[in-house]
Image (cartoon, rainbow, N blue to C red; front, side):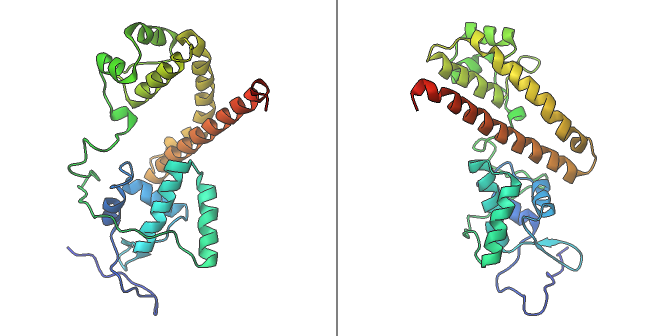
Amino acid sequence: MNEPAASTSPGAARSEPLMSIGEVLGQLRVDFPDTTISKLRFLEAEGLVEPQRTAAGYRKYSWDDVARLRFVLTAQRDKYLPLRVIREQLAQWDSSGEQPGRSRPALVAVGPDGAVPGRELREPAESSQVRLGRADLVARSGIDESTLVELERLGVLVSDPPGWYDADALIIASAVAGLASYGLEPRHLRGYRTAADREVGLFAQLVAPLARQSDPAARARAAETARELVALSEQLHAALVRVGLRSTLGR
């Protein structure tokens, strides 16, 4: 059954065709494979994009809307900008009559569950969906078996039963391998685990009330809040370390 034509106010009709939310998802998932319909609805609820609505309430997006969404997703992924800052930048563009750059990548098919057929092996998956065996983790990260044993003993690295490792475990192991090249040993990294646990406890208090709600929009907001908190924490930690090293570097 075809959706009704999009309703627009007099004089506001656009010459280009409008897209459904599924078609927009297909556009964005080419470059942002983790994007979901819930994410698009969340960004709309946050006032970052305002698709038109048909008489039946279906969302209809223009190419300007897609360009706007691309800007938001790029700012989050590449610059770790919080939504507040992104919203302010978009508001400046709106007041000046400017728009983020347009682009029209090839449209790809999106399955009923939001999956993009044929991209399973090329796209990065959610961390929890990656499953690496012990030998694979050692080979891909550059650490040796004895280091892996020590990291697990210290609680710096944890496997999922029955002994699988996810994408974050690979990131941790690779970072440890890099630090080891400068002479840092696993025993030096116990403080990282302790500090991370403290942050987890603090941030969990902020996102748990949203995550417990049955509303998909609330859960999407919880995930977005967690992402922003992690990004801000990384920025704060890096800045504090840089400041602490200034005297050593004579700056």
